Amino acid sequence: MKLNYKEIGEGKPLIILHGLFGSSDNWISIGRSLAETRKIFLVDQRNHGHSPHSNVFTYEAMATDLKIFIEEHSINEFDLIGHSLGGKTAMLFATKYTNLVDKLIVVDIAPKQYPVHHDTILEGLKSIDLDALKSRGDADKALAPYVPILGIRQFLLKNLKRTPEGFSWKINLAVIEKDIEEVGKALPKSAMFGNPTLFIRGGMSNYIVEEDIELIHTHFPTAQLATVKGASHWVHAEKPKEFLEEVNQFLNI
Image (tube, rainbow, N blue to C red; front, side, top):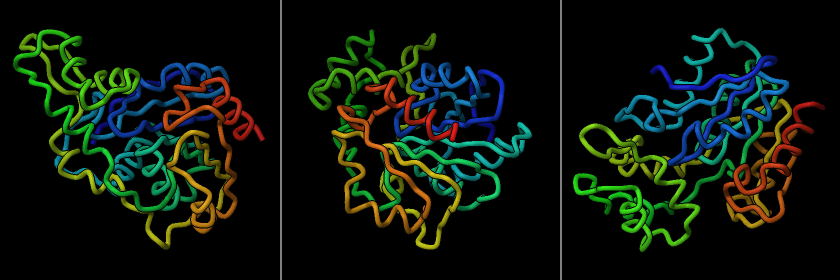
């Protein structure tokens, strides 16, 4: 599968993978900052952004997509950042192709199994009648009873696109809903990556808790953990300055 991407800057390659319901667009500001010293690839994962849709939505498939991507672009040694869903993809890729990734940064996700917890968001997105939709404002009103936080609604509604025929979804909503349990899957027990690894969590997020640290070190023996105070799950969007400080310090060691 040929993934959509944006390329910025010059230097050693750094690939960034977004989270569930996200896209490469969510990382443009961070990417531009990092592009002052690096060549940044902001990649849309399958069924997201402007990348192709597929009925297959697994971490194995997304890791394979990334392998094809680096081969197509002749990328040999690079660093890798993944947030949430992208963090799971990044973890699996690094443990499968340990000789390709120099440094790994995982943002607010652990290698454990997560229960399904996006039911309300999916229900809200499905409640939006695209055929009758006149504006993004109308979509926001329809989504508000399901997702009361404005910032999260704005993030989700970036997946709407306007076409000559009306509105449609950039994401493959039907397949994401069908395979939502796949999103929560744990990293395989035997998976291991020994190169430098940094986990960055939000201080107000519950995605990585103290009980997860032992499991993290089982898979990533050299892992460091940084906590960004005042941030929830979208660490890079809520606290970009602090997030960039952690990333730059780790990558430049």
